Image 1 (cartoon, helix red, strand yellow):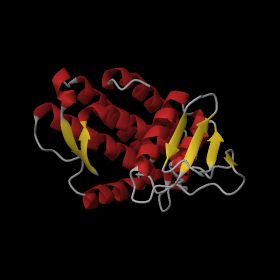
Image 2 (cartoon, rainbow, N blue to C red; image 1 turned 60 degrees about the vertical axis):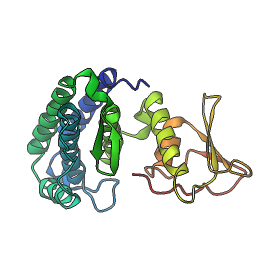
Image 3 (cartoon, rainbow, N blue to C red; image 1 turned 90 degrees about the vertical axis):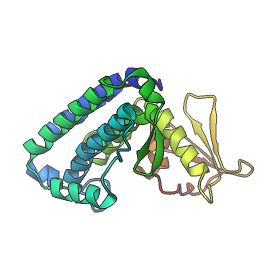
Image 4 (cartoon, rainbow, N blue to C red; image 1 turned 30 degrees about the horizontal axis):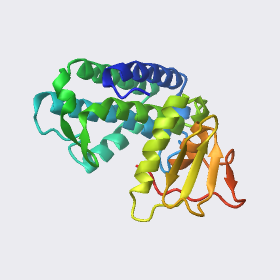
Length: 238
């Protein structure tokens, strides 16, 4: 998958369209139903996605202007905004998602070429501006699955699943006690190794299923493990 943020915007637009079609099918009862995220309804997930777009606009503006703008005013404000927006009617959620998606696209279009080389202050620390479009794409695709509607990890493209998997594997490998495992992806000759490969279990399956399991969005039921035994437990992701 390309790392060029302008080329990747086509993927963001397509993912946004898929998300909006799902949200347009929700009524109030659907929004009040549980998502895949503990303690969050679907309304919470959608409020987060809208406020996340605002946060990425802040970071793009910071990269473009050189101002030290944080993604969110604070963690407390972020959480309060999600709670305040979770119970809105379906039309308000849909309008908010459309509006903030447009603002994100406009902020990307306004970026001069040299601004992509900047480093911005994301929620968990410094981040290259060049990865902001990928970050928004990842948020949309993963949280679309979190809505527990008809969109599943199996609907992710192979390119997206491979990039998400490798990012999650790198995150886990840099942890204080990385779990040792070897990931083998259907149709790929390459392996992804986390920790010490000597004696490590080999987890195999389609890239979307491996990626969803690795980030805690699936139980890994479609995956195989060699030697026979339980799947390793991946650390918390994001």
